[in-house]
Picture: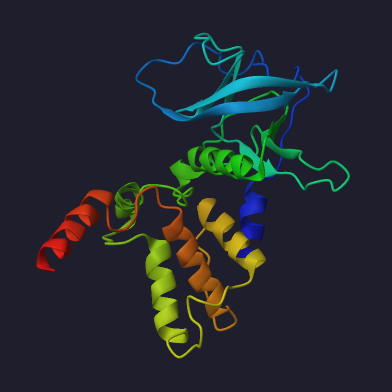
Length: 261
């Protein structure tokens, strides 16, 4: 699809060969212990591949601000290394049917962003998660950090944070993705049988998700499948950290309903 093509063009790769994978190079930000004020966005065990021996090391990874730190174990306070995420790209790698259970993704420094791309000079970091779900969670979390400055990374982001960010581009009561999907469904889908029940094309849903997460604003036209748009909207709502009706409001509503019975 064109939106994803434009997104990938923006991410033209620029890799350097100046250092061992996963360590900080001379030209990049020195790795120091993160401050306590930097909240943990995600933490967990991952395996990282060494560049020379090609063997795997199990390390405790912590995502804070726009850095991914790794430690020997959970108890360590000083990181063994860190990966600057600003201007980077994260990619899921195609599974090899001959090697089941290897859920691989890579972080490519200096492969994303636009004018304020930060020059980094260490090689791509190859990581392995212990499950497909774990890998998906890591990729989403890292992608949100990378693309947040460009208005992307909205899937899995708090609703109020997305709305607050998009107010910089004009008054808005709901995220642009939601408005765009709802408007399209109203125009093209109200007479469609099985709307919100029949699934859209999974590959197109994924491409649209990636485009929005990259900060693009893909447009729907008469050739766009309405079930795909409905599936995209459902996916966005399903990945919200908190439902549209917040948990505390839902409890109050449920309590009121019980009283009226």
